[in-house]
Length: 157
Image (tube, rainbow, N blue to C red; front, top):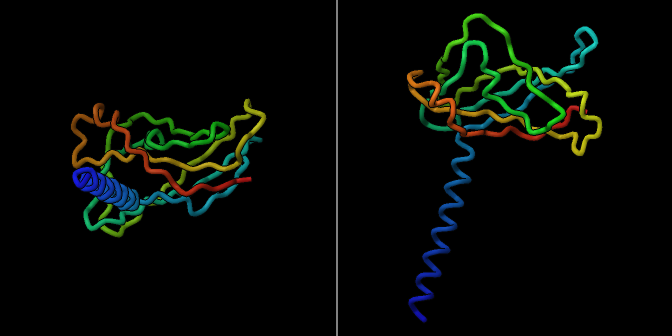
C-alpha cells in the first residue's frame, strides 16, 4: 500500500512539473497580431496583417527564413483565408536573428477564399513554423521541421 502511494505521488509530481515546463516553453517566443488593415486592390479584398515575433528568452534566437518565399513559413487556421505569397527570381535561405527582448515585425497579406460560402467561425490565428538553426546548411531537411508558434486569435469581420 505504501509503495502505491509513493509511486502515485511521484507520477503526480512528474505530470505537474512537465505541464509547467510546457507552459513555460510556450512563452519563450511570442507571435502576436497587433494591427490589421483591409485593402481593396482591383476589386479584390485583402487584409494586411502585422505579425510580431518576440524573443522572450535570455538567448539569441536564430531561425530559418527565405529571401522571397518567407510567407511559406506562415499558416492560417481558417480555411476561408489564405496567405498570399511573392514571386521572385532569386529565392534563397536566410537566417533571421533576434537578440533577447527583440521583436521582428512582418506584414502578411491575407486573401479571402470566395469558394467557401458558409463560415463556421469568423475568428482565426496565424502560425509560424519557427525553425531554429544557426546555419542555412541542409535547409531542405530543416524545412521539414514543424515547430508552429500560434498567434493570438482575432476577427477581421
